[in-house]
Image (cartoon, rainbow, N blue to C red; front, top):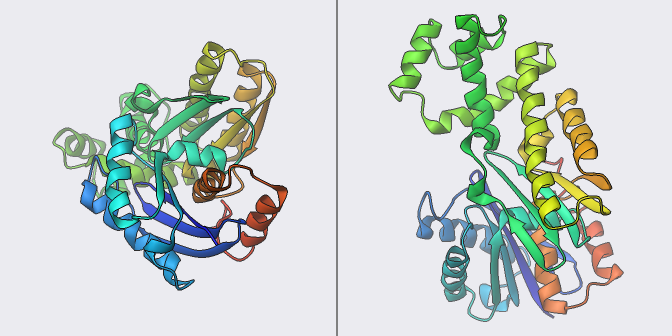
Length: 330
């Protein structure tokens, strides 16, 4: 029997799922988040190994038993980075076919089998990809900072407090909430904290939850931040699909990442409406599975060459035993 190990590594967590060549899910592991470029290569690899060993030990297998390792990792923006991680992991999985891709790709493959498709993957940052057969474009660093997922939403929330204080925006409930969150007595003090670096870049990542709650309670400023963000990010997909000649074709557009778990209904509606307006022929899909299942599927395809209905059925059955559906917290 051949075994495939799927890996999903992001800034907040690393997941591993073990499957046999028939698509039966056998084990699962979880460890801390990492990124080889912002933490260190060793730190990122250790997170992968920790999650992988958890998945393997549940079925009494070792690393030497793994036929293929398919990893979707955050920060894989250049070919040399994928090669670097592949070479490093090959040392720990000596008998495996090791392949590393950007985590955006496995999220897309977790949701659709179509070869003409696109994905918006919004979590702590933002990435998107468009595929047309063998041709696949991943945006990566082409996306400006102002659209980088939870980080940029957090920045916009803080800026809205400053804008409301100056009279550029109406009064917003974000003001008292963010003052309390940062333990600032006044808006002036909050601004001073930002200017002097007391508000760290990572601090903005905790703010989308506050922004979501405030929007759901009817605050117009908070709601506008969500809606405007949702409309803008669709333009990245539209532009690339047009350039690749598939705008207007029957395509799947996948929405993945923690930002699309937002329960502010108007945000979800704005994104879908913008997609249907800008990308005729699009089918909007909210990813059913967590990205790690996309890694498993890609690994199975490399191993089996041909994917059968039985394999997909076994994955579906396994999702009932392991928490790999996207709306479950793993």
